[in-house]
Image (cartoon, rainbow, N blue to C red; front, side, top):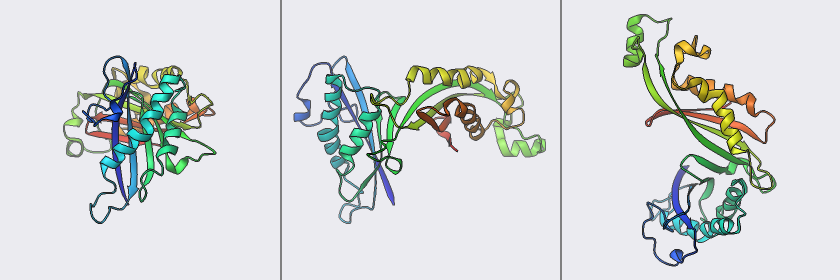
Length: 268
């Protein structure tokens, strides 16, 4: 099974305009284009299916762009203008319903509405039904920390062979990014969780404890654990999990980026 993902970027300007009646002028930066103060969004759609015989495409991306701009963009604009956008969760679920049958022969597996580069509402086809419109909310955070990758059960030579420069006795640092994802059924206003309260919870439980720390020396969770990106993701998940038990939005996963090229997602 192939999975094709396409991101469509677009703006809702302060004053209505007729950009959608014409040809896209800059689909990379967003179309309709942001002309001043307004709202900027991105919508990503993941389609699953087999490539068509003639084109060898799961779906022509022009077809994806066309359906999103024809069906989804006017709906988002209407919500913005009528001030019915709410928390965003019900809008993401509504867009999923609009687009799920837009490309015959390919099924929509995931739809993500990006309210900012860091705040995302997503719908997973496998866990969403009209009777129970489950959505996912993801927010990104950051912290800076130092660590040393070292296994006391190995010899010094074996540690250097296993971890290389990351075994430096004085440690080394990273600017980590953390994405925390909650899943649940939004309330009548589209709110899955109060975002500022959500951010305070993550800040208190994780960011304040991790930021500008030596993970090996200052965090008890890593006195026995090697602070690899895998273990950092697991520790953060387990620190946060009890904070969201019984809440409308349960903790679904934690993803930690050690560098732009290396990250790990953890869930239970």
